[in-house]
Amino acid sequence: MTFTLDVKEQLLRVNTSRRCCRETEFLAFLRMCGNVSLAAGGRPGLLAVTGSAGVARRYFKLVKEVWGLHAEILVRDSRHFKKNRIYTLRIPPQEEVREVLARLAKIPDGNPWNAGQDVGRMTRLDDVFSGECCKRAYLRGAFLGGGFVSDPNRSYHLELVCQDIYQAHFLAALGAEYGLNLKPAERKGRFLVYCKGAEEICDFLNVIGAHGALLDMENVRVIKDTANNINRVINCDTANTDKAVEAAQRQLAAINRLAQAGRLQKLSPVLRETAALRAENPELPLAELAELFDKPVSKAGLYHRLQKLERLAAELEG
Ligand SMILES: [Zn+2]
Image (cartoon, rainbow, N blue to C red; front, side, top):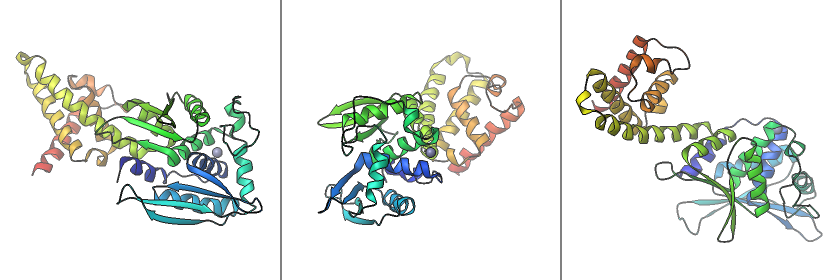
């Protein structure tokens, strides 16, 4: 599974019981990857395409429960990637779709189905959404509809592919409310917003509630950092190879082994924090390292935690 699909599957676990958020999330999804179809007589229908079965099911259920719409999911194999499947959520033409379109019309993100909308004028975002919860829901729906995030082992890149530049600007403005730096861009006729850098991507995932994916990202960062830090410690002052430095090197190597085996996120929160703080501060003496913890820990307590990490890493070898 790609990292993108992985993040999307994790987002499906985000609990959205509030009707306002469920509506908003679906409207954003629709805005990213949906289309309106008109039947004879002018009754509107909707079509949205996604690569995730879970996402298709989520909205299939939602439109039924929230708007009482009749819908179906069509499956076909992707022409480009043989292993992948494409899921189309089809909402056949029916009068009730007008209600969805009316809700969509209240979001001034430049949606083309909204005749007469003044796309140049940005309304205050607080007037658009019924609450803070819905702003996050909109970003989440946008990611589920048009989001892509690269495997952090290879590069740090996240983007949301939009249907037009208005929505790209709308997403950028919405993201800015959370301090996110989403940049609108046009590439080969495609409109998108994107961000780069581990920290910015982690911030975005955090805002939309993808906490599992966040852990994976952090995990990769720890691996990369420890590899750098081990070199730094080894290179630093070779004359000063006293016991503390040797111990720190052993601890870092252990953390690195645990990270590579994918074991870090399975550790208890306390051990995970210990591993992260040691990886970030390879040269710090125990007493100073102990002071960095959220919950205070004694020097001896910290020593035991680090020994535990070394033992767990040694068990991997055995
Ligand atoms: Zn809400």
